[in-house]
Length: 387
Image (cartoon, rainbow, N blue to C red; front, top):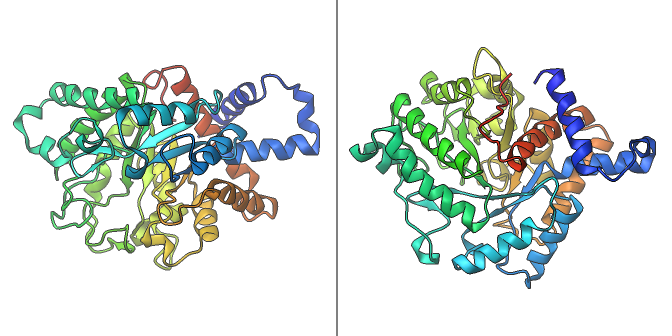
């Protein structure tokens, strides 16, 4: 990101977060600590147990949002029971803080990966594979109509961030996490890009941020990264970057998720996954590769690919130092009511003892605030984060 963009972002942050405070107060040590804590909070998305505001865990995460300890939440199937319950839950969480708006996120791809389903009173959407293979969706206009219905349902339910689309190429149909689960639009980058374009445009029209995933490409893997590190050293192909290149060129990437994938070209070494490697995110940022300057989001840091070899502290520090702007910790395994507080404390301590630089936090915060400003202004398509 150019310096002018960072400067602009930080000015926006001051206005949004401290509109009632004199700027002179920022010179005090307490104000400086508060500023750091606010910036770190925006970098954290967590899951949580519970379905209503009467649940202790829901009340706890509401308080964390209100205080800026976290910047948003991710909902999973266990949080969703019915349309009425879901709307009440998301409204309660969203109203915890008006500025900056919290991210209320969900995985809603269609097919086998959709959290809003007929089982909990919502619609049923086809998998990406079905869309890619169905002649009825061969045009961008037809796909746009389908995903407009999905985005409308998400918006009505109270979400403002969808952890999709998948832009992985279906290079290995036996891939247990992409191909076997029908999560890819196809093996042809033209098809994938066209349908991802429709997915993103439809969500932007509904004022929902999208997250393209899983960089640098999960479609060729032989392993499910939920379980173990996916080594794609021998299977990954250069063509897997093509959807990212085209979508970035067209200003259609709101955010990009890095995958728990190992390839020496995207690793800082010792089988370190792309999600924890600066080399991967530098490739994503580089004009010679993708040229994306927006928000980078980690895949869930509780997944087996990273949790088996690294402590939560190590995962968080490595991901942020690599250039990740927002870390996701699903909380599905731990079911910890205070997880957001713990994640925040780990990152804050790492900044204070210089294991993470403050400049890295400021850079991430600037990018997040630019995206949240677009969201607050209902202008996701109007201003891109391309350099």
